[in-house]
Amino acid sequence: MKLKLLALLMTAAAAHVSAQVTDAMIANDAADESSVLSWGMGTQGQRFSSLTAINTKTVKNLAPVWSMSFGGEKQRGQESQPLIYKGKMFVTASYSRLFAVDVKTGEKLWKYEHRLPEGIMPCCDVVNRGAALYDNLVIFGTLDAQLVALDQNTGKVVWKEKIDDYAAGYSQTAAPLIAEGLLLTGVSGGEFGVVGRVEARDPKTGKMVWTRPVVEGHMGYKDGKENGISGTTNATWPGETWKTGGAATWLGGTYDAKTGLAYFGTGNPGPWNSHVRKGDNLFSASTVAIDVKSGKIAWHYQTTPNDAWDFDGVNEFVTFDMDGKRMGGKADRNGFFYVIDATSGKLQNAFPFVNGNTWAKSIDIATGRPNFVPENRPGDPAASADGKKGSSVFAAPGFLGGKNQMPMAYSPKTKMFYVPTNEWGMDIWNEPISYKKGGAYLGAGFTIKPLYDDHIGSLRAYDPKTGKMAWEVKNNAPLWGGVLTTAGDLVFWGTPEGYLMAADAKNGKVLWKFQTGSGVVAPPITWQQDGEQYISVVSGWGGAVPLWGGEVAKKVNFLEQGGSVWTFKLPKS
Image (cartoon, rainbow, N blue to C red; front, side, top):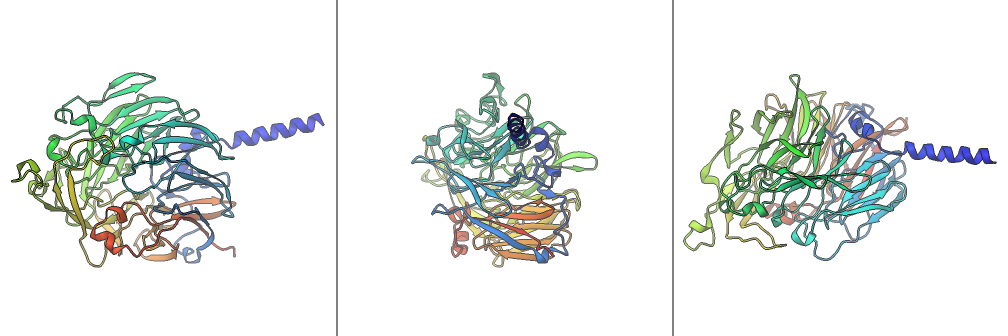
């Protein structure tokens, strides 16, 4: 009897150990066909799978296996990328919820609903973009600016840590990133004059290891001690404007083991009115490369100095190999695609990926700076006759960007990036503004408008070396969901009209589509379970477009909200 009991205990212990997600497993995530352990399907963020069972010939037979509703009245925008491990799916939902689901049946195993206080101030819908897995934990951020770690098996809270004061406009919507045994997170709230930063914690306990502000002039800390100011105080921010500088790191980051650097995009400077903060306003609207071990900035590249259009720079930085070097690709909200040396930060190539950019003519490859069109910057209200409204300009892209939160994909097989793009512009003008804790910190008015009658969205394939577009698939409504590409020569993406689409990665020919019942504004994933390839995507219309969309919102007001996960595979012959 004792021997049997001991054997059972050893078996249970072994099962517990095998259930732990390790640093080595996360480092191998992109190559592991049986799991999806990180946002981006690998810390580099390529969103590429080597699976080939679902391919250009077989995709026509792809069929739904199950659909699970998030339930309740809390629908709104669903922008989450699910994670897969040991037969479980971990998927977040609107209003800071997290579900564990059986991947083969769609059965809910448990759910966690975070108790949100009154007065949360999310900028752009009550979304959540995903979680992180580490050890036996699943970890995600909440709309009241907290981090919560739950037991993967039970959903019980293991630890909970406050990021910042939600009453000051802070929130957390991005999926955390695990790199070198650390949990890396950013902050949301750029429209409220927060101070953007990246934080590193012990993922097992939530204890802070280091914090790195991404607004010049603020002090970083490591192990509770000062770790150097970011940049130089007042070098690119006049007066005390740096104290409410924005630059929120609201999309999270990527990590490349070959460089040892984590890459975080930073958002718009605060306020939108650029005339009250003359200067480049580092490190806003930039890519910031941070040494994970030291917590210090290794390099930065600013895509929109002295941003006047809410172009942010928060878009994901996806590392890849080109000509024997490690590069990073970034489709910036400002409408230009950048290819940057991932080790040094030196610009290698830059080209427009949407039509009709009005704010800059081009990007100077030698200096890395945009060639601005000065007359297309919104006017200074202080220079106007009544001091209340600056001159209005028409700017393209609009402030929702040539690409927004929806992540692109890169295929090392085709050597192309697959970019969800939008063609729109805006009338924009500046107004006087002063900072008030918890108040919107814009100093601008705007009306967003489509550029074309027949489409707004377009999925496009680009060669990063030449800047040439290989193909595009146009879409009536804006594209707001991410992209997946596979070694089966397929590209998957969703549309606000509710379709999950699949096209030939080489030529863009649409080969399959499925109606999910609500708009898809989330990135699809794929993995292999018991020898079969699965595809999953979250469906649920929402996000920034219907909230901020102006004339564009009128074009999509017929779309229905929802909240569900759809999972597909090929039928057994």
